[in-house]
Length: 382
Ligand SMILES: *Cc1c(COP(=O)(O)O)cnc(C)c1O
Image 1 (cartoon, protein in one colour):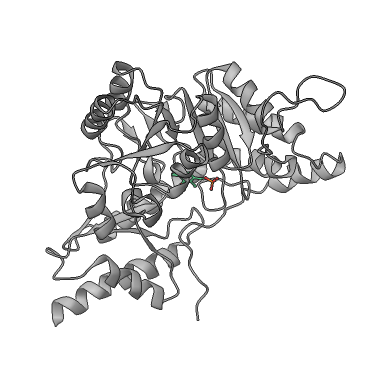
Image 2 (image 1 turned 45 degrees about the vertical axis):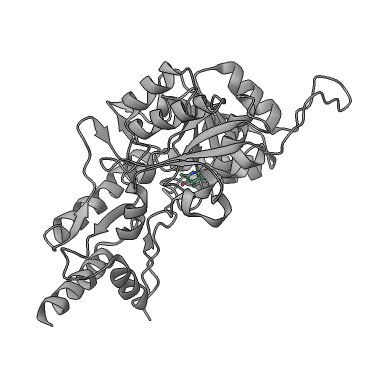
């Protein structure tokens, strides 16, 4: 059997180990230290726009703290994109609040501005003003930020950008992660850069970042003994992980280029197969193309479905995966309110993520496209 081809594997740049070794040599083996500070500086320099960063233990922890900083608590409502990974919504539940799910639009697959406004109006009519809005830049594609932000402004509800998949993407030339009052990043093993596991909270507001760091380190008040006037969390990033992050930041631009080249190659080879389509970037949208995704329309493909392709790849030891299953269809969220028009459901039915690692070899990618082309050839012969 050939070696397994993964959807999105880690890809070290080369200098990560030097930073980690320095941490060992200086005995900074702790959830603080020079690499943590350095990694935060690197993120701030990359994002510009007065960004401040708190390096944390995961993207999920970052989102949890963002909700705490907005005082989301039991009985509150928070609007969240339905088509996403469950980690976008779980922290709402951690706070005892209710997620209100909103469907996607077809141009970016992200939160529909029209449905967002319908949802807000209806929640207001029912007597509750949502505490926050969580749009997600799925697979690296920016949301329609201008439209979402003007609605958020109109109703005075803060936006937390879930940019976990979108480091390196831009909207009208401005990096994603710099639009919301806060935004979160993830450095999990499968993301565009990784610290093995980790995340960050980003904001222009220094006070929010200071409070996030305070809460993330067990909320210790200033005193010689341990004194607590807040509930704390153990959410800080380790100095070892941050060392990996510093090395990864040196190759982030290259990783974006490599992921975008994967996308271009897939599109060039597969775009003429009947029923297969790719998501283009609208004017002013720049995606890091974290994962290359395709839609398979069985009415145009001679009956070939997304599952036919996924299973054939699996037979060849190649990992691919359906798009995120929308949250409003998840058993755990079945009782949560949802405002939709069927868009995310259809995307889930037809969408497939293809292997997209920045270290995907030319020959592995050719193997993948050959297999997909053969499925279509066989079907046109029969
Ligand atoms: C990965 C991811 C997260 C969670 O990040 P972790 O670092 O794995 O906790 C949140 N939202 C989205 C959209 C993600 O893809």
